[in-house]
Length: 204
Image (cartoon, rainbow, N blue to C red; front, top):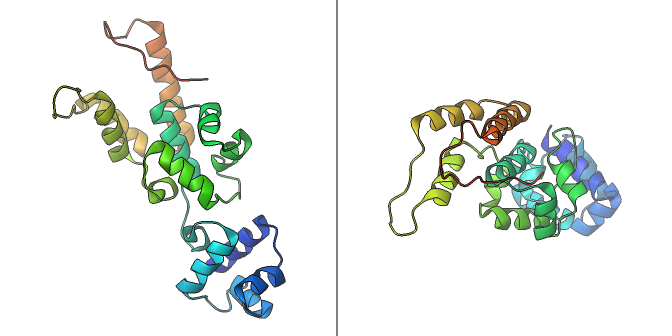
């Protein structure tokens, strides 16, 4: 999708006409029409003004892919947070979280909700929107959870866990979900569980 197409999509999602948006920007609507039809390209300063008026991150109106749907699900899965819990603790409706995680949805995230999600998972905005929720994130968050409280050393992931994580990084959302489901089934059986290990239960 081009920058012009994304401006059009975000504008429509905000419920604005070309004339309304152009008016708020102090421009002729014909200029906006030229941008949306990719006949001209707006300057980055103009894109920033558009993002402010439409209340979305400027990244969403650049011709860059957003990985929000994958990253949000990734962070929820790795922290064991259900949509209902995320909704209750951030104030973002469950229905909106669901659309954010749907790769076929055209819903754009607002700056307010992006800030809430980034704050909740304690990651920068770019890690929520960009292609960045990777194996390194998994290692970092796992290490922080497992680090002994009485020492400054950081626990590293076992080699077999690293191999699984590396493989999962190459999978799509459905594939990762199947791996997680299978791992939880094995853990729930009790047969493969470590002695004395406290189960990190996930909410349904």
